[in-house]
Image (cartoon, rainbow, N blue to C red; front, side, top):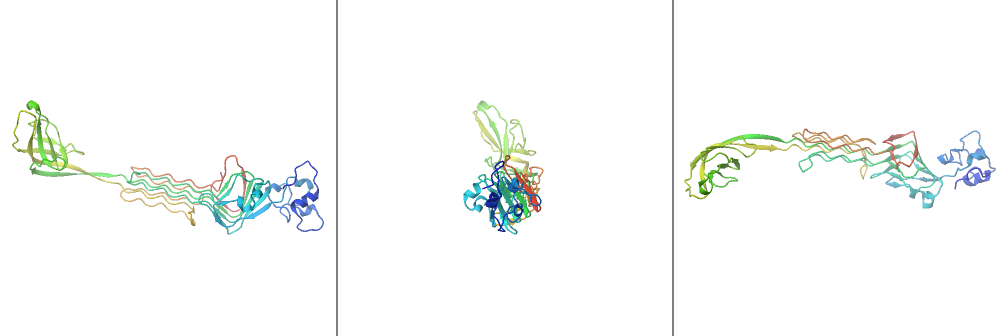
Length: 376
């Protein structure tokens, strides 16, 4: 347990009891400089000098640190590394050492300091701590999602859920790179073709047949005629004396001429008088769908089996599919997918934090190594 707080009297024997005596023999305060053989250089001992003048009063609140060493692994929870749960939840100074070349990775967060911690924790990292990569967004395509999908965010390297943590980094701490956004699907292209046709006999099937029909209502009232040719409709318009009709099926532009009558009788009640086709033209539209966009590239980071570098986005397909965005490097956001004239590309995923914590939790970082990603 840490040494008691001021102003209670403090004896050198209490200091020796807390920190031990590595050299043995008579006890002297000169054996208890911070960073020396007996006193750990951790934040809870910051009042203890590293050299020069030293006094018993410098040791109020100081304490001997409990040390643990991390091995390589995935999704590491710091608490079990200190053995007994009481060690992690007691108000003692703790030191976690991550030696080179140890690598700790995560499927989201690589290393977590849970909120159950009491006391202080000094993370001394000389290894590599790496969050998960962000996945690239889906390409825009004709399957109901023409716009490119968003890339996913990279994972954080370290999550700190309780105040009192100091990170001394001489290694590498990297959040995962965000995934690139998917490219948008290309614009469809519609062309028209005019097909001329000659005279044809009446076949009497509207959907795919050929013919002209003049309808008469009750008591001989005439109605507008209509015609059809291989699935294209013309009219209705005009009356019994009309001999040419315009195309009404999209995109329009064709005409049909009335041919000879079939000689249907004309009773007084409502009836249909049929005619052959005298020729004409029809305009047919053909639509070519746009090409699929390219998938977004994956970001840097752990991909559930190994640490991978960021990849470029895939090229869009012809015609007109837009390229996917590149995945982000360590701790960096992915690039957005490109847009086509018809569809937007997806947003790039955010880069993972090097260190993340709730807003109310403060921590300290001292860095002589490499840190990639925002500290949040």
